[in-house]
Image (cartoon, rainbow, N blue to C red; front, side, top):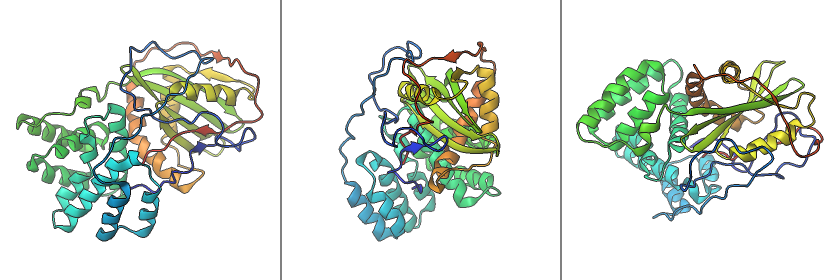
Length: 353
């Protein structure tokens, strides 16, 4: 489990002098499956919020899972965070319970594989799978450290692949997609061996590495530069919000959302009070800025936000690689149909578990 505060859902690009935090659209990654053909970015003057369905019913409630985790020895501070979760995070908690039970039974490989079990959910889309895998990778990285990351992942793959479990296959696929370059040959070979033994891939595996650039735009307010990078898997777009302190040289915000049109609307409002307004960015310009941004020191406003920012870095690096060769269009200023707002408002973004 990550160390994130689920009650705070706002990113402040600069000190907020506009409306109070919480007013305005609540951004989040939608879970709709009835998505039609992609007709391109919606005009910035039009915006309709995207409702989310109720989470699916689960065999055990979140509280019941947490009670069992408490018996396994989960620290009280993590239990407190877990009790604040909604039912949509049941799969992550259930995976943690299975992992803890396996480790306590003397099977650490089964325990580590159990953490990947949420990626077997048939309702999972490719972007959700990326976000879940990136957080697992972040947790593993934090546990073993920089120096031992490649060796630790390599040993895990070598011990997990012979089990023939579907969790081992999704782990190898995601490590090949988002993991360190030094483990990609090993994970690719292990995944191929598991498929040859009869294991089926998840439906989203075929989409890995196919995210297409959609658009990018941003604004500058003093030393703060806020910009949005939009990509899409087929008809389903997603975006990364990036905030950089250019004077001090630090990355102060990095978040993901699928509510790209609501985000564009909010950015238009935020940029209305800045001298340059909101401007589109070419793919080439985005590749440079995005690549430099994720190499900067992380200076999150809140320490728990830094965990989320770190977990997104592998996905953003993969997108930077996707930008190579994308055609460039001249930058232009985007207009909002509303009057200027006072100061830079908060950008509300829903968090991952």
